[in-house]
Figure 1 (cartoon, rainbow, N blue to C red):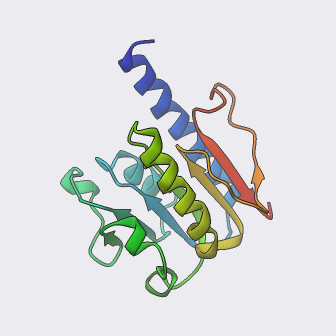
Figure 2: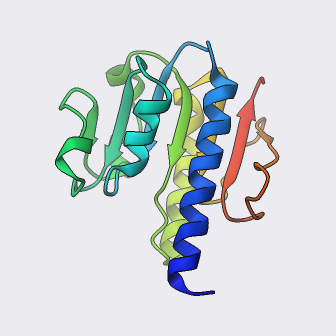
Length: 163
């Protein structure tokens, strides 16, 4: 498969998983967390799919398109290992949805970050919440959900708790 085809499949999977998650969280109160802003396309999709919800973005170094950069209140910039612990005090309420897009293509690095996120993120999430990730997470007590039709297993990971 060409790199272009792989990119298209990844982005399509991302969109389809996000759209399913938007429907699942419906009226559930809570913020949305975006771990990894990248160029801002997913952040833009989240804002359109969940108007009125606060979206807090964690990003090591911002390089997104200017229209897709959150305001300073909603941008948590810096190393995830330093910014994620204790973030609930800044966010102010549990999150209904977390979207994680941190894959670097370097398996050892990605596994280390995924293990850290697996340990830290649940404390930020509402009782009936959804987590989407480009990396497999180890989330005891969370349910691994079926992926939307057309999304290949292992392309994306979909978890929920209490839904």
